[in-house]
Length: 172
Image (cartoon, rainbow, N blue to C red):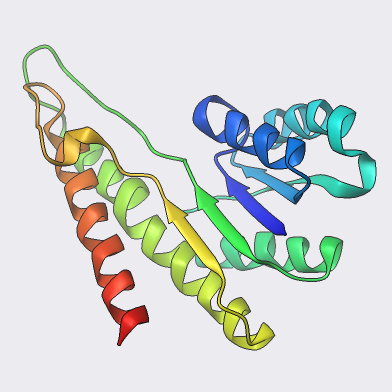
């Protein structure tokens, strides 16, 4: 399988990329932190080999950047089977408030960017005439909000609805 792991430079994305490599996938590790993505790629290459792992930069707030990362993946490995996004931000405040700008940024990164990623990956799957897989990472905060993390909680609830919408569309 060929997987594009977005948010792969650290945390859950890094662990996902390393596990995919260990299980034999060809993996493109994408992140806004291009140097971090490259470092994880070098780590994964120790398991899977240099021909099976690559890295690319991506800004998931920008459809053009997403399309470029997808093109890089297809050019490197000949296609795409799986898109996994673990990238998100978690702004919080002990007072339970954040700025209007941070609220907007949280929704942009945690909701709208996932919509853009899924839509652009679906174009690749349609061109390849395959049933690809898209994994968008939500959170328990989607159903159990906490004081001080309202923007994150709302964004993950919206993402959960977005995931449900895509699942329903695929079954229709």
